[in-house]
Amino acid sequence: MDFQTLPPHRFKEILMRKIFWFLSLFIWASPAWLTAQQGTIAGRIIDMSDRQPMVGVNVIVQGTQRGAASAADGSYRIEHMPAGVYTLVFRMIGYEQKTV
Image 1 (cartoon, rainbow, N blue to C red):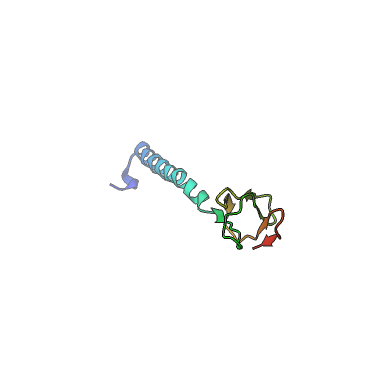
Image 2 (image 1 turned 60 degrees about the vertical axis):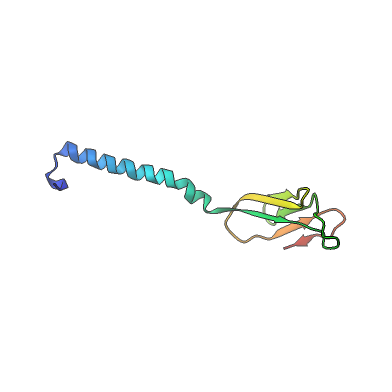
């Protein structure tokens, strides 16, 4: 049985069912597409003289308002960043600013 021989109400029913499944799949897959284009910048900061973690270092993504401060173990994490290449600025009182 092909679509040309179906009664009009049956054709509409099949068409609506296909549209429903297509839209359901699209809505279900959309969050994966959105999150695939974002990432996290993370790292750990240590003092090169004694290899100890540095606490409270300000890490700023240059040219944005985004940033973080390093934790007790020296780690920092900046989430939900659009995919791309960034320059980070590290600042702490008593230390020279470092741009990477």
